Image 1 (tube, rainbow, N blue to C red):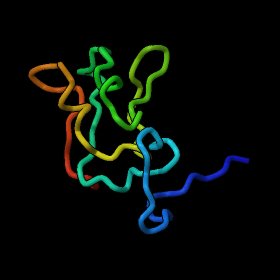
Image 2 (spheres, rainbow, N blue to C red; image 1 turned 90 degrees about the vertical axis):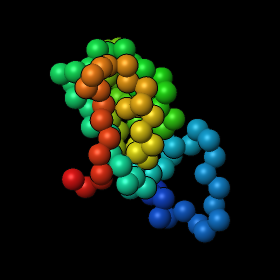
Image 3 (cartoon, one colour; image 1 turned 30 degrees about the vertical axis):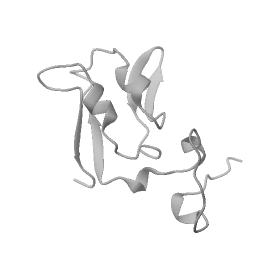
Length: 97
């Protein structure tokens, strides 16, 4: 049986989240901004995957296939590093819209 991972609201007050532990916690509800991937614009350079600090870019068979919103904190690094111009393959927008 798959064990559920704790969300950030279940962490004790004053708990320290260490670097590289994003996979251990579902931190996606921290977001105020949400990335949107536009596959029709994507050139599969994987710059988003390289720069994502939370390992939230889903890659299968050496191609981006989506974004793991359970772990994405909405930092926007993926959108900033996307080299596609003039319209980026990843754009940022308000969460919940």
